[in-house]
Image (tube, rainbow, N blue to C red; front, side):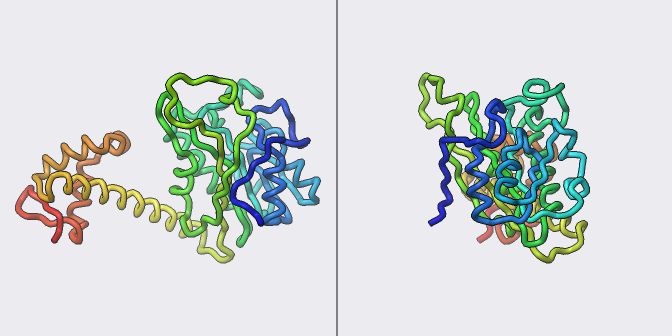
Length: 299
C-alpha cells in the first residue's frame, strides 16, 4: 500500500553527495513509480539527483537551474524545453537555510531563491516559479514542489501552507510528508526548546486540468481566487473584532481593535482602514450599520 509519508535515510547514488540540501533520490524514484511520468522537467535541479533517477528509469528528463544559466523567474520553462511535460517538479532553496549563489556555486545572484530579502519576497517569487511550472505542464499532468517549513528566532514560517494558499485550490492533488534525515540540526543542542525540531518536508502536487481557458483568463481566475481568499480573511478578522467588542462598536474602536489583533495585516496593507470599511459595507449579511459611524453584527 502506498503511503503519503516517505522516509529514506539513504540519499542513494544519484546526484552529488557534496551538494548541500540534496533530496534523497529514493524520493524521486517513489514519486516517478507512483505517477508514472513519461517525461519530467526539474527547473531547479541542483546537482541533478532527479534527472539521474529519471534517466535510470528510462524517463525523458530535462534539468534546468540558475547555476546552469536558466532563471525560473525570468525564463519560460516551456520555451526552454520546447514542449510540455507530464511532470514538472522542483526542490527550491528556501528561507536562506543554505545560501547557494556565491557560496555553493558562482557569484551572488539577485534571483537566487535562497537570497530573498524576507519571507514575503520568497513567497511571491516561489509563486511565480510554480506558475511557470504550471505553464510547462501537459494538461492532465502534474506540477509540484518539495518544500519545508522553518523556525528561526522563535518565528515559525510555513512555506508549504503559503504555496497551497497561492495556487489553484481545485488543482491540489496530493500532499506527501517526507521525513528529514542527516540534517544540520541533528548535531546541535537547543537550550529551553519547548517545541519539536522540524524533521520533515512536504511534497506538494497539483494536477493541471486537461482543458483550460485561455492563458490570460486562467491567470485572471487565479487572481480572483486570491482576492476571495484575502477578502475572506479580512471578513473573519473584522467579525472576530466585533465579537470581542460585544457585537456593536464605533468605527474608530473597530480600527483600534483590528490594529491590536492583526498587526501583520496592517504591515502588508497601508490602506487597511479602507479595507475594514469595505468589509463592513460589503458584508451586509454579517454586519449592520446602526447609525452613522456605528456598526453591529447582523442579526
